[in-house]
Amino acid sequence: MTVKPMTLRHLDGHVFTFDAGALCLELLLTGGPGPVAARYEVLDRVEGLLGWVRDCRLAPDGLDRELAVTPAELAAVRETRDALWRLGLARAGGGALPPGDLRIVNEAATLPPLVARIAPDGTRAWAPGATGTGLLGTVARDAVKLFTGPYADRIRVCGADNCALLFADTSRPGRRRWCSMERCGNRHKVRAHRARTQTETGG
Image 1 (spheres, one colour):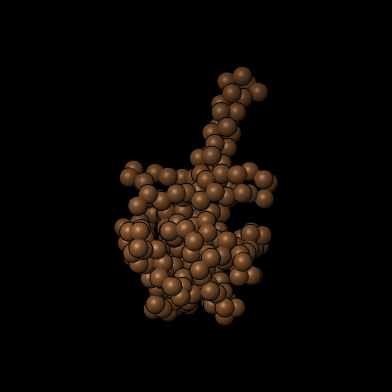
Image 2: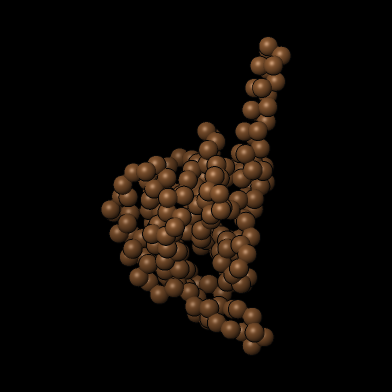
């Protein structure tokens, strides 16, 4: 299945596409711990989570309309997301994975995941009764797959000094540096070009 990159809008208004490489890393786009990620917080309300479900790589469409989420489930998703932030940063930096955060994600991974089914028209659909718990179990299992799989050593922070987006580099060459070439990659190219021009002109 071809995964469609998410469309993000920065606080400065710039719109760009971003492929996080994994469902669990897409969840980090909902905010997180620390002052930078907190500016993007949407998991302070159920509608924020449903909006993310609508835009993330979970398919088919319509899950956001079927999903029932309680306040307790929302809090559990937020706790797991924050744990994933810390685990992702630790992996990207080559450090040890925090035991407490591993416990949170591993416990969430034991929850029953969302269930897919074949619709009468032969297409893929979600089974009735989708809940926030099922969503959490699905995301956490994706995290276990990522952190123990072939791309575990390719979890990276965007190479731009002023960007903190995490992604898994699933490209064949494994040389991805930027969250998006439309944003940070292009800005790096522009700065590099200006630096070369100034050097050549003696400016």
